[in-house]
Length: 134
Length: 184
Image 1 (tube, chains in turn brown, orange):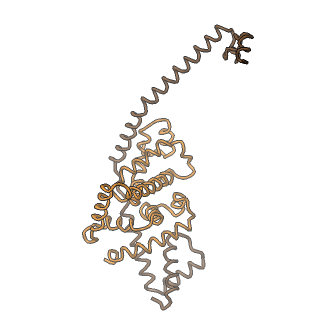
Image 2 (cartoon, rainbow over the protein chains, first blue to last red):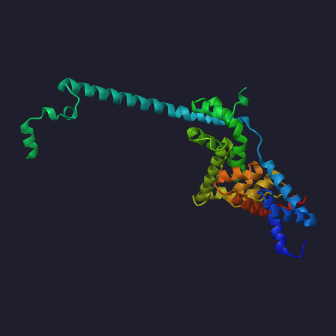
């Protein structure tokens, strides 16, 4: 190792970064020259490459059983949700029918579907208004 | 012939409720997702958490806009899910004594595995766990799963320079931790 520790640390950092980012032309030249001149830096490069390659071993092998288990879980979730969706649809359909029936009754009674007819204001007498006023 | 279908075609079919197409997407990306989860959390919870990633993906199939590759999108979900699991794990440590004892026992068993006895995979996994989460994430995405710096940056939502500097620090730490093994 050279006698300038801070320069060595800089070169080491440059070496590490060179594996993951594009160096500037001046950085590339500096690193290339340093690699040519320093045995320890070449050893560091080899060690780094060994380290990086060894981590590739952690990538798992494909597992068909895993895919099956995801699909199983999906099917279970869908089975759980389907009755809720069906029930919700029935409730919504019943509400729509009730609304249509109500509107039909109002139309039958007052011959109109204007807001006054729906609120029942058309059938109010003058006395009712006084009664409210009191 | 389905093996030649592009992700987009399978995605379109999955959106229409075709679970077989979704299954093919899972099959195509499961190793990568399990690799990310395994690297971040260790092997114990891999399948459960990876399943959760694909369930999240299925529930929000329409959210994928195709701005990045599907692998990158799933990688982002995987990393975020793993980070959430790590946070939950940390919180759990403050919960009941009985649970705490179980976790401590598991940790002790893990620490007692000597490098001589454990195989290289276990040793690497143990070394990974000693890194802070931000550094662990870049190591897992870049070195374990082989994503490019730009893809890694997209998944972690950080600039590419940050990925390079986190990797540099992580490698420095890993070299120290693994020095005895790498010299063999």
